[in-house]
Amino acid sequence: MKLTVDDNLCSGHGRCYTLVPELFTADDEGFCAQRGQVVEVPAGLEEKGQLGIDCCPEGAIALADDDA
Ligand code: F3S
Image (cartoon, rainbow, N blue to C red; front, side, top):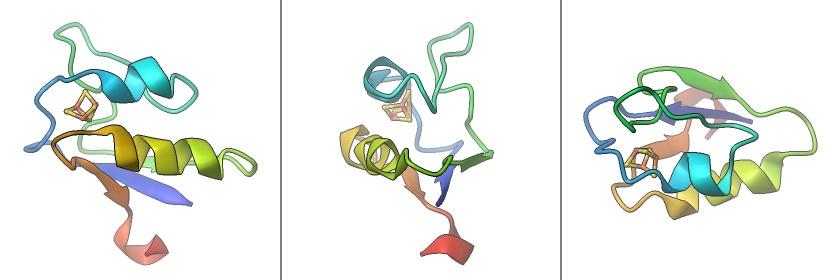
């Protein structure tokens, strides 16, 4: 499972790194530090990955295209 964090959609709600610190961290301004990156979800953490997708109110976190 791979996720993307849309650089333009993330507005710093912080739910991703609060609820799923295994996959997401905050940058100095409170945005998701993984913006614009592909996040590889380790085996066994797929439910956490899905929680990341579901928790972002901006819909910034999604399955990567090659993993959809
Ligand atoms: Fe950004 Fe959504 Fe996380 S707005 S900080 S990716 S909850």
